[in-house]
Amino acid sequence: MNVIKRRGSRESYDPSKIRAALEKAAIDAGYSPEEKREIIEKVYQTVTERIEGEDEIKTDTIRMCLLTELDKCEPYIARSWRRFEKKYKG
Image 1 (cartoon, rainbow, N blue to C red):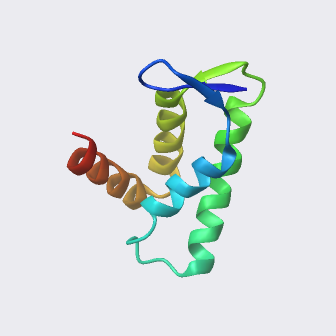
Image 2 (tube, rainbow, N blue to C red):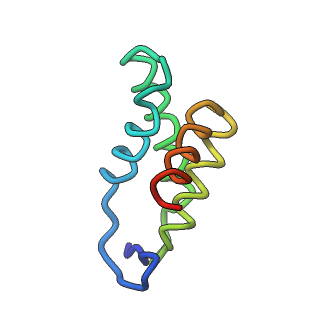
């Protein structure tokens, strides 16, 4: 699967980037390391199942899948992610 970046470039899908994004979002969430691992794994599995089988997918689509799932199971982490984006990505 290829991922279409915001500026139109393409790169191979790298699942470790999803995990890294989730880990960053959960840094200040106040969960134990075990709780964070469980949350990250649950969200990761759900998002992976949603995008499985696609030939190409946009980064924005992956982002929306992640945030939708976080909104359902861990809204605090979803809010943390959005605050980070607003502060650093405009």
